[in-house]
Length: 593
Image 1 (cartoon, rainbow, N blue to C red):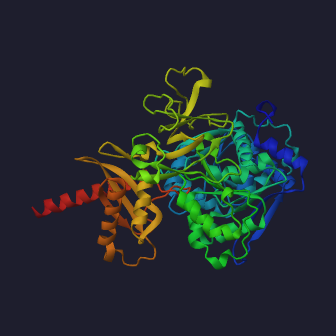
Image 2: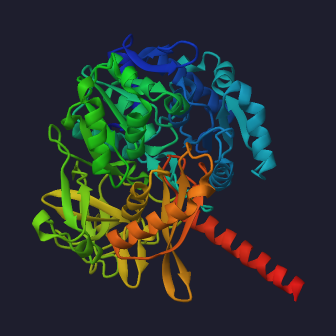
């Protein structure tokens, strides 16, 4: 369906309800005492009717053109609230309830930035959401409603509201806030055309579609990939969506794998750490009965993808039917709606050893074991679907030749139209290559802030520009250092380490903050041993000294709402604590002088 014909989520939903009214559309699996979970299901007709009713209620309340924050728990009401908002001609803002641990500051910052007129919550949370807004100085004009309340308000308008203006492809459908823990949130304006195009790009790249496949997801629906996998792709592709709560995955990751066993030919996705989490938290006795041979694809969307994670997951679950070709390393970001590239269908993930020293200097050279030297293994994230990817020198804005490290720039109909409330400045959206014409929309690119290379017709993501650790003029990728640290001693918790640079009188220096394993009860007794092991490993592997090693309890390293380590937030926290310690030392000295 082209934009001219009305490429919107509401049109796709109406079409599915007409073509397959009684076909199962969305299933939510809740877990409690029941080991296998309890399901609640909607057909395409039932979903379309409820969405139309909620949309009518929002229109009657005056939500057309306004922002509507979705702050409901994971479930079918979240789906209905989101689709009802975009169908009403409002701008949805997919978020999370105030009770999500550790993220109240981000929720407050996003609500202040988006300034919604409405917030859709669960009936039992309406008062808590209103109190949260009031307590954080959010505009008191926010009206907190529920799907149930909107349904009662609309009455039978859901089936009679046919004369209301339908959303248009160029209208903003929702604001996708990036997952980083920053005090200045960025909400990407995603149009109906953006999300529908990106859903089709992903459906084609992963080779899934109506009548053949389904999606299974525990990813939070306020996250870009969670929204695409659980809502957008199923609606655009008329593909059944099976959803569970992220907390149910965290408590027992085997639940995710059991759903993949029960719902055949499923497409699913998770960040890199989640696959390792399954390896460690699903013991052999729980793997009995798993049958993963029919899984259509397991997207690994955390950049860069760890080759060791791919291998560990395959070795652990190959007896359950997992095939190497099922693993689909991918790359994406909110500014591109989400999906950009994935490994070719039917091929095993490509892992390539590069010379670490040359890579730090900006050149990708495939390392042979006989050559010696240090090696970095990178996983290819594949190729784009109906998008253009360029590797560009971030300073000169010139295209780089294959094998040269540069910033990843993107063009395509899936690119969002900018950040909410901010002009196009050419630094993110609307960037132009050297010699290009900024006035020509066809020459505008998205600067991702990610570093990567083209090698052998595939994209490799090497890191983020802002996270790059530069010590004595040499570039170091933080994820490389973090992996070395985690392998240096068994008392260090995997996927809970942050490496970053700080300014000192001697220039930029490396700091590492690492959580100790939850199994460690008295970390002080072996602090010296762990510190020596870390300093030695980093020095030998990377040729750089650790200026400061901070050994902290579990839960200390900040993470984004999508579960990734938030290095910039960790660095800010470290510097704040260092300033406080310096101040206290100065006051103590003054008091004893």
